[in-house]
Amino acid sequence: SQTIHQWPATLVQPVGSPLSLECTVEGTSNPNLYWYRQAAGRGLQLLFYSVGIGQISSEVPQNLSASRPQDRQFILSSKKLLLSDSGFYLCAWSGVTASPLHFGNGTRLTVT
Amino acid sequence: AQKITQTQPGMFVQEKEAVTLDCTYDTSDQSYGLFWYKQPSSGEMIFLIYQGSYDEQNATEGRYSLNFQKARKSANLVISASQLGDSAMYFCAMREGAGYGKLTFGQGTILTVHP
Image (cartoon, rainbow over all chains, first blue to last red; front, side, top):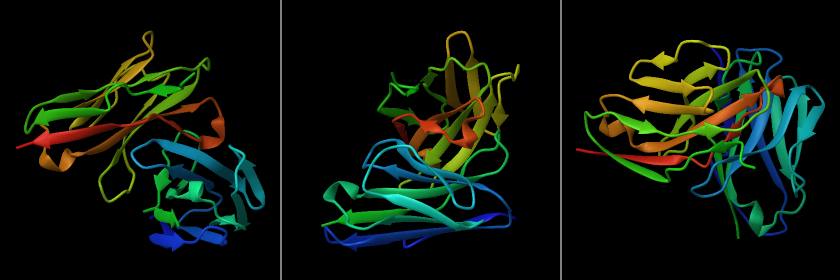
């Protein structure tokens, strides 16, 4: 069966520090991969998605970037965090177009 | 314009009763899919139910059913026989056309089930 791993679960980082969140998927090949962000008590905002290795589409201009160095690995990065980058970050994967998104457990990021 | 609108910030229901969570959507695509997710306080996103735009029957999954009214562009979630464990945030989401699988989410509805 397919599983998705996302880490760390929580992270507290100072303003101006770098960020690297990692997500890996097991049990499937060539998944579509996504990074979403959720502000407190709000809906999910799509940040990036990827349909293959090295293929990244950005949905919103921001302080973050994403990379997909391997088929089942998706990384969210920042060179210098801002206070506004605080939030709950969720990685997800999907198969064929009609299939639902399957989410990781999320990373709660607090920028201080 | 909002693609997905959930007008109920919060809903309350008595245990064992049914509850309907509203969702309206906006798209000009003929082919699209509608999803409902549950998010407990732990934060994980749990997929509940899916309805395709060409599906003629309303989707059902156990105690969850989707009341799909295409002309009204609504896709309400009905939870029957509510349980205390149903207390959570519920999100409606849409995938448009090919969309590379990406979903657009509504703002969510917090459901509280009272004993």
